[in-house]
Length: 290
Image 1 (cartoon, rainbow, N blue to C red):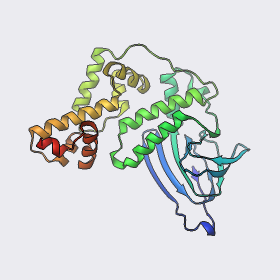
Image 2: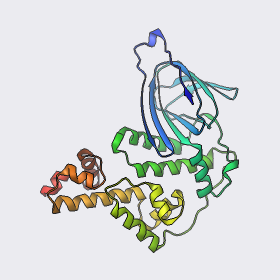
Image 3: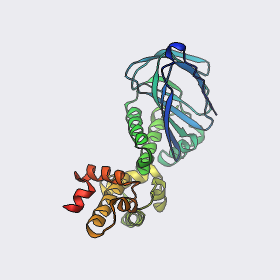
Image 4: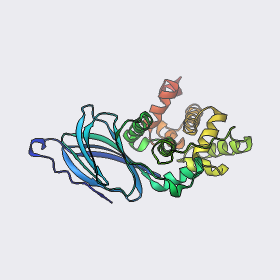
């Protein structure tokens, strides 16, 4: 459940409320710009992180479980509201913030897989106006993917979600457990199985859970062990392979660049061109003519 009231004031009538959001598995990312106002918010099955983005500090009043916080929120300040906990907030000037909603089921899954702890006793702590450089960095990377729209990298977002979940459990729960680390990377047989799967499905959306399930381990440990062997993260490897496939098709076929983009798992001509230029320094058209 989520309820917001945001009437603003006559003096602020020129300010327009706007939002942008994108949902992925276990994660919803929203960017808000709101005029002065107040609101009630409660999510039954999702933990919520709010990250201040406005360069000008705003005065905020927040009430959680009868506890009141009043103070200035500056860029980079964040708050954490556990699932099922009601929140009331009031702000006196235009607010620009990022909201990250993560399912409690996903947090419990990561707690069991990555940290081997009993998720039933996992308790996320409510926080108001704190600083956490790790969450801020992940939040800004998720914001960048949000702004990509349909060209966002799902595998990359899932990797960020895993890292964020582990960090929340380690730093913002009552027990603050440490993850269990396993030495060594993926065995060769399992690695080849994953690489063959990626090669056969480059034209499709590939999710982190798909790759981890191939070898029967959790997403957090899979990502870590994959990087130990290959030297890059799964999403970086996937992008490299898609660019290499595009190179082959550009040189060895007469397909249009738009068709090649779709055949290599990109959403559009422009999506391929952007990623191609970032990795090679030139456009697909220039590469084909070279």
